[in-house]
Image (cartoon, rainbow, N blue to C red):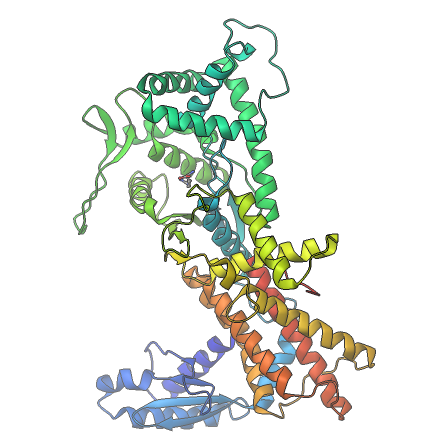
Length: 584
Ligand code: ARG
């Protein structure tokens, strides 16, 4: 259990014994660490209810705590009603030694693991990955790791944008380019070629050109819509092309996401949900939820408590085409059928907030999703350039992800002072560059816009990925020297300096911070903690002479303390999807 929860329980008991029970007791890290480790302000809030002064309550509870748990805490009441709590060194050390022995670093799993599906990535096929796809991938990957670490069954689904007009546009563009391809011939009976008629670059070019053309050429656009419809009805040649588009895109996506250390358990997409659309339409029809509005089939989702306009969720257009909402509902239907999850989390751009509100309402209203299953939308803000506008390439274009990764690696190499081309160094530069990017992104609250500043992110100073990675490298190097000196690992002993105690206290808070991150869906909490821990460690490293310590017991306790710090920091980086390095 996290130390914060243990204190909370002990406090709750003390409040009850002092006859102030049944209230919500809050305890937090002390704002004045020179005075105490934790503080509880609940006496202030409940004074009115009991008609006594808050100081009296605080004093009674503090006395009770000291009586109950004298080995564990020292509690002091302070006017006008604070309860200041410090851990005894004895208990702090005991707690750390337990954490050090535990494969989960003292984190206690939820007794009831949940089945959770995380819908993230959301890349569209036929189009190279660009920075717009970055945040979903980086945040989603970290959330998945946090949810898994805390004991849940989690499945990440990329939910590819692999259906609809974009495919028709590409196919029609290809026809204009190469009209004689076999895919465009009528009544072909033999099998279509296995080799695709384009590579990823040509495919991206087709997509770009098709998009430009569709904006200025309405005939082209209409034709593309026809192609899309024909594809949906199973046109053989188009289906064969669609498969080529999928293969090439997925291969490219796997490569790019792979370079970022991002993986998906399910590579499903919008196309996979199409099979369930008729079922969902029928389902809505049976429950009398489908209404006709301007020729389209919609579900009204307005509620009395709404304080903003809530347009109906459009399911099917008058021409029969099904829309984004229908695709998402069919996907939810399949997820419930195949995995029966307790929760589905969507990590998608903020600009889709309304869409998901509508879809969630339809899902609950129609009982496709039972009330016991949570649907959560984690919307993220825009990644801006240093000019404060959405991040672009220097000539104003959309930056591809592979170009961005390239820039990150270059910036990292420069910082690392490495010009040579050794494989090892390249790998290190990739890990540092990607670490800089992820930490820079994740240290912001997901829903905020933030400025992507390559220079600042890749710095070894300040709250950055490389700063935390470097703390780890520093620990590894001292540990190596300790091992060379023959210093072994023994239980951690009581702190002998303020900085050592501070480091110990930070380490004991690991589980609490994981809980903060999990319950708020905020990887930024892990960034905050990892940075704070790295700083505290660096202070310890500068002030305490670890390698020249004369007392052998103390020195091997230091060795164990460093080992634990290393494990905790490495675990934090893992939770963020960042590689912890041995050398830099
Ligand atoms: N492909 C979509 C886009 O690029 C994002 C998909 C988000 N997930 C979902 N289930 N709708 O906008």
